[in-house]
Structure formats: structure tokens, C-alpha cells
Image 1 (tube, rainbow, N blue to C red):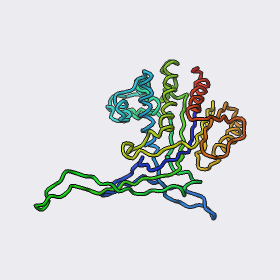
Image 2 (image 1 turned 180 degrees about the vertical axis):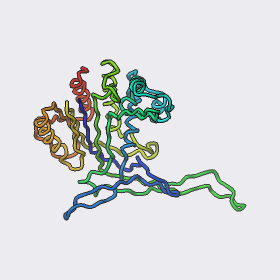
Image 3 (image 1 turned 90 degrees about the vertical axis):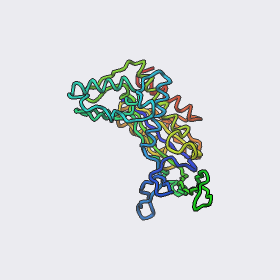
Image 4 (image 1 turned 30 degrees about the vertical axis):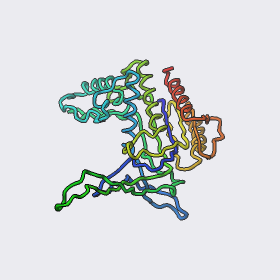
Length: 329
């Protein structure tokens, strides 16, 4: 199993990337409870958050773009960024296990998004494919949680003048949209070996190595698209956030999976390097690590960690090493 894991710290100002509800003329930002340490133990606080579903939607939208630019198949619904994932499939389409096995193969071959992102068909024999990519919620880094806030912004919606009570009145309405600013962190993982391979009943690659390489490249580049430029979430047209990647780390392991630490502490990259060395010794796995940092945080001292001067250089290295470790280069 070739496993890619990513984590990053992001400085995001004035964002409305994930709104949870509307009460009257007030639109609230999503919040989530987190546990933070205190002098005497721990306590729960509520912080701004961006859901994993929101990040996953952005990832799959860019996966569509990356797949089509490589001439890979994408189904009509996914091409429209409507990720229903076979949720409206006819119940009688799959009636037995043999048909279910063939059905998964057909879907994998016909749509890269459902290959990488999984699907669930509510047929007579339900067919489920687990997503090959995983993402966390985006939440404020615990060490910098005091530097996060949610504040409502006042706006006015204007309509043409109306006649009210015999007099002309302006058709205006005040409304509020909560915006958040924080040093955010999140993690993501990719089961590289699972791309292009069916697994519902039988485990077998169903696309050739040339197409599989293109699918792996598309899956990795979609991570770059959302991470480097913040291309995920809602309200991008009028609340496009001030977004900057402060630091990022990537690990590639085989055959055992390894998930990096989220960037809750400023020494997270050093901790990942030390932990990955111990993981490599314990499991005997191949393990590689690359990182990028713009902020002033501790650098790892172990030889396993490779530093890059830009996020683009790091992803170029990730792509090259993943393809080599997967036998696709």
C-alpha cells in the first residue's frame, strides 16, 4: 500500500467558506467544539470550522478538472460538480453479488471521481466503494487558537424603489454574514494503491498502468489545487479570503500507512520527522518526507526530512516519488 499524507498551516483572513444556517437576515459561520489544554487540565471551546464535506467537494471539483485535462473519463453528473455518486441508481440494477462486482468495475472505468472519491449505489444488493482520499475538518491551530475570531459583516441588499402607503420607498434590506479569521490547520490522506482497483468483492486493477498513472497524477494535483490557492468552500465570489500557506508537510509510505500530525503546534513538522523515523524502524516500511515552511517555526533535524523552498517544488517531489514507489514510473 502506497500512502500519501499531508498537513498544513494556513493563514486565512475574512473568510465565509462554510456557512451553517440562516436565521432571519443573519447567516452564521460553521462552528465546532474542540478540546484545548489549560493550566489545570482541559476545557471545551467553540471555534470557526470548515467541514470535511466542504473540503471534499472542492477537492472533487478540481479532480474533475485535472481528470478531464488528461483525457480521463468523468460521468455527466460529476462533470457538473453534482456529486450524487450513484445515489439515484435504479434499485433493480444490481440483484446479485456477481452483478455487484461487475457494477463496481464499470463505475471505476467510467468515472475517475467515483474511483477516487467512492460511491454508494442503493440497489437491491447495495454496492459501496470507500473513498480513496480522506480529509479532516479545517479548524484553528490549538496553539494559536486565541488568534481566531468570528465577526458579522453588515451588508445592504437593494431592490428598485417600491410604492408603500402611497409614497415611494426604497426596497432595501440589511443582512449580516459572519466572517472568520484564523491560523487554520487540516490533514488529508490518499490511498494511492486503491486508485483504479476494485475492492467490493474481488481485489483487482481494472485499468491499465498508463491510465492508472494519469489517475494518480490527477488525484495528487487536485490536492495541490485546493491547498495552494484555497480553491474550496462557499462564497468565493464576494468573500474570497485572504489566504496564505504558512507551512506544509507530506509523507509517502509503503506498505504501511502513516498519517501526519495536524499543525496544531508550531513544531509539528519536527514532530512528524521524529515520529516517522520511529515508524520506519518499527514497521520496516519505506518512508519519505518533504516539507515547506514560510513561517518561523522549528526545522526538523533528522535526515529523513527534505526541505523545499516552495509548495510547488514539494508537490513536484511528491508526484515523482509516489509514481516511483507505485511502480508507475
